[in-house]
Image (tube, rainbow, N blue to C red; front, side):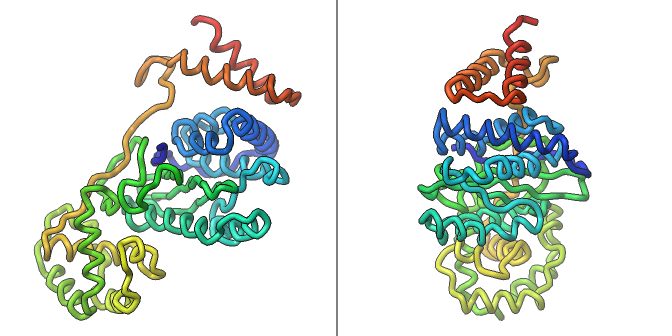
Length: 359
């Protein structure tokens, strides 16, 4: 059950061509080795772990603390296995910017060839994106979405949002085997280094707000608009400033009419309705809290963490045993697969020499 988020400073530019070409080769080989050793489910366990994913980006040679490690690593995996998807049983859709909008079409294309449940997979992709862009309102705009899946309809989502005001990007990880409810604590193993005021409608403590918000959509739109006008006239606590900004009752009337006519049967259906976004959910959560006493969570779900520690002992000394296990795994996988690519072998040999000798 490894899903979560990770915060990274925004860096501009891109990986040089000479480096990215090598990244794709190494990413393809590592992906193949992980599938050989652990199967696609084992690979998904690792990709959905923000620590392991970050370490993979470092192995590929990208800046360890750059926002670009997300887009570049995902791109290297997708390009690295290109032409071998059916052999590996691994399929990758989406990407950065315009490429992310092609995710449903790419899922459908593979579904026609492989017989996967395209509708179910596309729904998972869209719902994960909607949760992190609207139900977790942390100030990060999603601009990168990659969806990996197999023939058994298991999947992993790696997506990233941008916050230009604080100069950081936040990465979100999802894994199908860890998600029992898309709107109730779908994230675990969360790591980042910035916490802030966040409307978290997928927190367990927000369950009553989710229920009340859904129930409110069954009310006639005029009643909701009247409640919003009342709330706009109240002197609200400071922590509500982020929620009331840009909420116009007049503009909300059209979307409330749409939700009323659609008659969603659950909060998930409400969330996934076209046109229902962050502002709609903020308005509903405000009415639910201030008019009916059902308060949502305002706690940022992100936590701070490191993968293996640091050489200077901050935040803790390097876990040599864990490193040795990783190196041994790769060494055995290389021998078993009998790969002869010099780049991969040289990189692994350098790692082995570095960590097998005492400091």
